[in-house]
Amino acid sequence: MGHPHPHPYAPAELHLPGFVPLQLSQAQILVPYLATSLFLLLAVWLISGRCSRRLSDTDRWLMCWWAFTGLTHIIIEGTFVFAPNFFSNQNPSYFDEVWKEYSKGDSRYVSRDPATVTVEGITAVLEGPASLLAVYAIASGKSYSHILQFTVCLGQLYGCLVYFITAYLDGFNFWTSPFYFWAYFIGANSSWVVIPTMIAIRSWKKICAAFQVEKVKTK
Image (cartoon, rainbow, N blue to C red):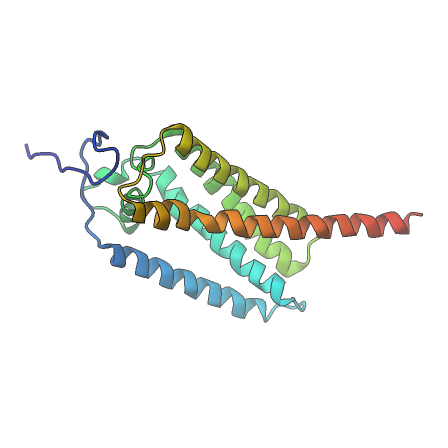
């Protein structure tokens, strides 16, 4: 029986039975992810320009965002939720490697922290499909578009609040170095704070304006 591999995560006493070290480098993980993301954004941008109804540049950018975040929730976060033994797979998939790498910035993932798994599960199962529905709603000019976007944004912001607050309450010591704290824990999650906040404000204004117009019509 071989000796267990030491893990690179914090805290050092974290117990990870059967841990299999990373087999891909950081570049081998990040470059395909970034390239695929850019391809997706470009594809949605080009397709949105060919919609039957004329869309504003803002709506086209929103379609890009909702497609990106929806697929990220379903594919990336979904594989974390439904692959509890990703850190011990002898033949790890690309997604196993993604989460072993990201865990350098937040070891609650590799340790399967219940709160983290719960938040990610809700995000993958509910917010992911809802984000893709937002793409369709914007493209089709559905009346529920802004209500849907506002609701999903609130869900994303709530998830981020729980994510950061529980990290603080649990000791705030889940990263291996300041680099991984800023690059992964803060940097990789900041988009899901800034962008949903901006979209929520915009959708709230659009909803209020629509109600105001309806109120005037009924006078």
